Image (tube, rainbow, N blue to C red):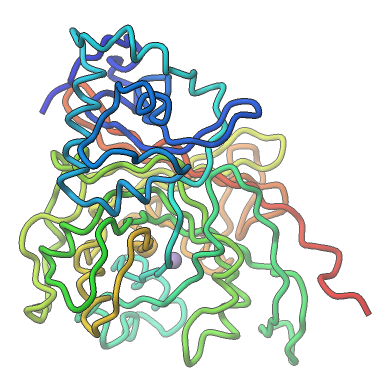
Length: 418
Ligand code: MN
């Protein structure tokens, strides 16, 4: 696969995240306009609502862009997804006879405000990165018992809250919670002291299911991927997580990047899962390469300071693919819906510099991280801005995910008054 040339020069630069090969899908507004669907191309956005109304963007089945979300397209299924990509490629490629008409519907990305690209139906988060699970398990249970006995047999997850998912750029409020740690002999209700991030990818379910599906069927149901930050209150989590898993520790917010990268754009970057030490049960077996070679980075910027890159890793470090997670999710018969969001689990690599959370980077606070500005961090401080970014590097082009960013605001004075 090589670069598909566009008539828009900015889309052809090798360092531009949004060439014709990508066709990232978002929801944007400018000034006081309504939010509406758009496609990223170079440093511009093609307004899909306007293009549909003018007759430029006609897709069989029609009428997809009346709502400010991509759910209608997602629900329509793979034939519509392919038709959309084919038509957009035709409009935006060099030599297209639609160039003049399409130029009327372009907005500069720098003038646009981005919104949630889809309505999240339900949200599930997994714990499916082996290096992350090993690091966390070693901290809490020792190296010999790092992985729980079920871990190599199934992707472990918990049901999160769709209501807590926000788009990149949204501020995050430090939560209050019930804490009990080494420094408190009794539980106390107070602002979280160990607020953290988790570097993850989110898979978005396009077509729904009702009943168990195979790994291949699950892969076919996935519409696309976003970057995802599962903000985590470690001290709340430590006190509450037994026996039913995380609850309020993960309910403050989850941030996603504003651009959905369709599965089709990632096809050239498919890679196999890591070697299996334990054979998976047949309903979970790998049926082909279902992870992707996507370089991931995390930057931390204290208020008023430049960012420091604190993590570099790759999505291929996951142990279970999104297709395997989705297949496992349906194994009980659990119905899946258009707009369901599946967090991959924290993506850590084997190196210390590839750890996807501050819990791991600072080893539970025992080894604070030195930032370029000279400050140390064990966990996030008020005013810190955390930014995830991701890129699949092709030959002379890249598929970029854009950024997934959020700034931590101080806790409320007190959430309850007498
Ligand atoms: Mn997580």
